[in-house]
Image (tube, rainbow, N blue to C red; front, side, top):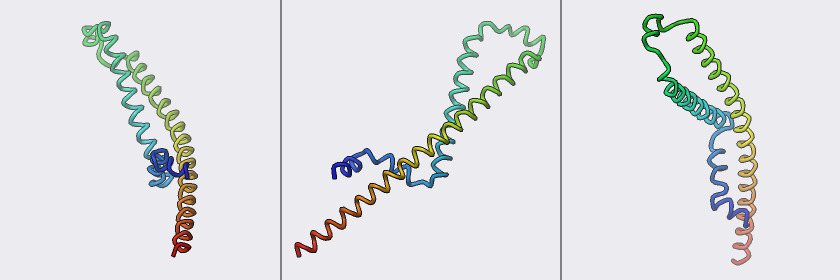
Length: 131
């Protein structure tokens, strides 16, 4: 009974929210959130690094040499590869973590529902005995 009240008091709220979705849908939702977070984080870090080095850029050289030099193309491709690698790693970790969270929540919700059914049966028996 105490565990049941704890679960209803807030501990089980996240579990119930998770199990409203099917497992593949929950995992996809978490992956989408992760992709968005990684993209935003990557571009914020890229912007901060760019702002840090902005005083070292000689804009006159960029105008005379052109924007696409082999060195700049190399750095752009390297940055893109880093983003792709980070994205793959985070997606794999997110899928594994989300699947584990969902399975654990599903077990707890099933136990909660089973306990509720047992409690309902007890109440019905007590009601019949009192009548």
